[in-house]
Amino acid sequence: MPGQSVGAVEAQRIHFSEPLPLRSGSILPAYDLAVETYGTLNAAKSNAILVCHALSGHHHVAGYYADQPDNIGWWDNIIGPGRPLDTDRFFIVGLNNPGGCHGSTGPSSINPATGKPWGADFPIVAVSDWVNAQARLADHFGIDRWAAVMGGSLGGMQALRWTISHPERVRNALIIASAPKLTAQNIAFNDVARQAILTDPDFHGGHYYEHGTRPMRGLRLARMLGHITYLSDDQMGEKFGRELRNAAFSFDYDVEFEVESYLRYQGDKFAGYFDANTYLLMTKALDYFDPARLDGGDLVRTMARTHRDTNFFVASFTTDWRFSPARSREIVAALLANGRKVSYAEIDLNFGHDSFLMEDPQYHGLVAAFLGNIKS
Image 1 (cartoon, helix red, strand yellow):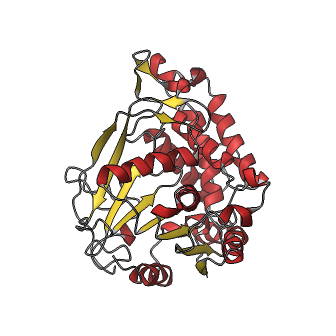
Image 2 (image 1 turned 90 degrees about the vertical axis):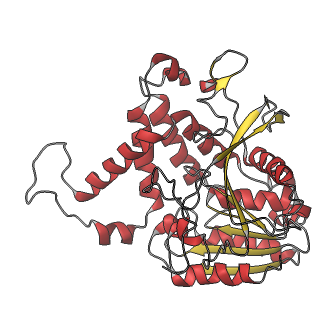
Image 3 (image 1 turned 45 degrees about the vertical axis):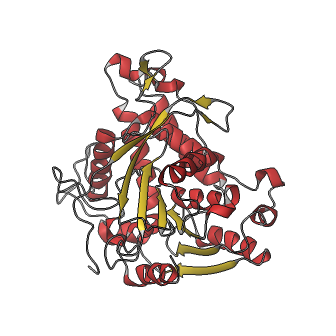
């Protein structure tokens, strides 16, 4: 593995006393953000990179915890000394967005108005709300302008929104395995996943905390469905094929095929640590993301609000059918129509949508080359 890990890290929780107005019209009162940083912020505060997380992500982007050495950050392979996000050069910031379930204020947090967990009363949050919260985080660190904002999937949507909502505060944007909005098919997948949770008898209208239960079955099914869409057909075929756990059919409805075993394991694992209300919020934020909506669907018009000096790196993966390369090319075309500086890569990796998380020399080399041109 090129470069080195950042090693043992510690999370911090940062309190914000000023209420956060939300796109829905609701207001989130005083709130906390769980944050991790790697590297050192320079005197000019010009070397900071914000890493935005995807649907199930969080602030633990790199390294490990001293008391949990197996708890490795979700994008550890790209961050550290000598790695593409070189912590000898950059100050990297990762956070858990509002509505999350990993330390930031979310549905499982206490609602100050009731003294009980927010549950279903936690307001719906949009990508633009997260970006506004992240802007306050930048203010907390005294960062006027990010050297770069980056992310994959839903994280890429946040990076794109940054360049539209706060164009003067982003010098470079890396939008990876993302899209300018979801297709109808993607919205349909999200709704089926939500229905699995909403119809779980243990959901209790989102207030399951008070009942001492969790909608494990619904969340498990939602994750299994989602996981299928993150992988490519070829990858699943190569990894599992039609292999049976035993040599013959059992003629029942228990686990028979290896792929069934894998999906159930992933579902059980996810349901063991993630919060169902947060899953609902995250998928809704995905569905609602459509920055060109107020411009009548004209993405070119929308991207005219980006800063003329911002550099863009857009990357897609050939086997990603959930966020296909065609969707990334829409972003590229809209940027080029506005004369923006764009580097585009369509990378041949066999891991489907999850390709953006993988360690691949070509992929990481492209990211490193783009970031290598940043003058901090």
